[in-house]
Amino acid sequence: MKSEIAKVTVASLRDLITRTGFGATVVEEKVLIVQHTKCRYSVSCRIGADGQSVENIQFRAAWATSGVNFHFVNEWNYRNRFTKLYLDDRSDPIIEFDVVTVAIAEAHLEECLGLWHTSLDNFLPK
Image (tube, rainbow, N blue to C red; front, side):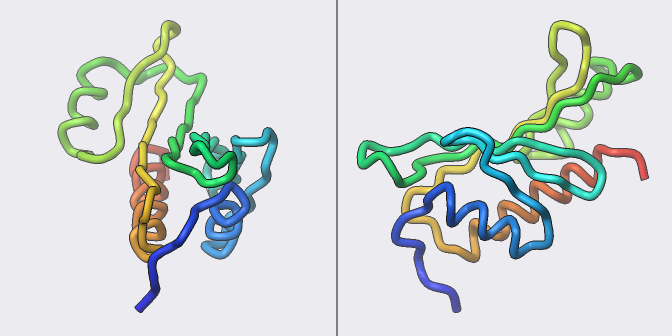
């Protein structure tokens, strides 16, 4: 059984994503860009008072595409409890997933990452 993560950092989060088989690059001090099998997405980290530990993260993917309407968005949000889908001002779809990382077990963080990837797989065309 995996132990608690004492402190999630941007580097440890990058390493976790990389271990799951996806390339992750730190593009800004608190932002990772990840290459998923079907798209790229960002991971934004909110840093705690100590200047290093990540208190929460937000996974985010966006597409410039048509064909997604409010009915689809409502159905998606009803079926996918933890991720949220919305349309931007140009009606392009955006999926987000927020995770609190304070005192999180590594196994739970891995499970959250798996849930995020499953959501992307379910949204994107086969």
